Image (cartoon, rainbow, N blue to C red; front, top):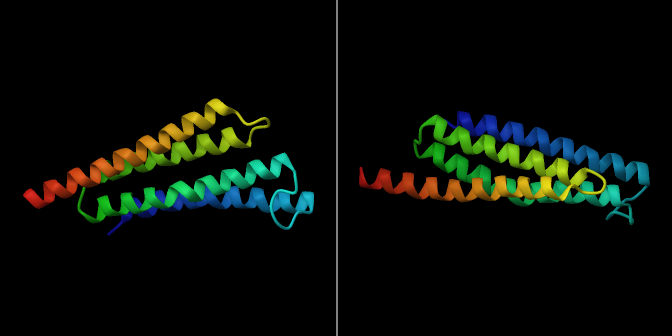
Length: 132
């Protein structure tokens, strides 16, 4: 069962829905059907949503692999939480007018470090399982 993955993925999906509704709301407000129409607030919202979609799927896949391969729940849960934290910090940083660069950097660091940790955990756990 993928209980931890289900929880982490559900929380990430809530964030994605919120980012998507922000884009939809700004498209309606600015009467823009495609692209940003030159509106900075809409451009930021589009990039926050797009950046989320670019990084989260790999994180979810790696979390699911770790859990499916029998890693302890805490070993799956911790990187899941750090991925959520990273994505939240990044979204806040990119949506603040003007974009808060330091929050974006912190959010990306959380995201990249989490993805790197998940790669290492998956490789390490898989090798451990193969050897044992």
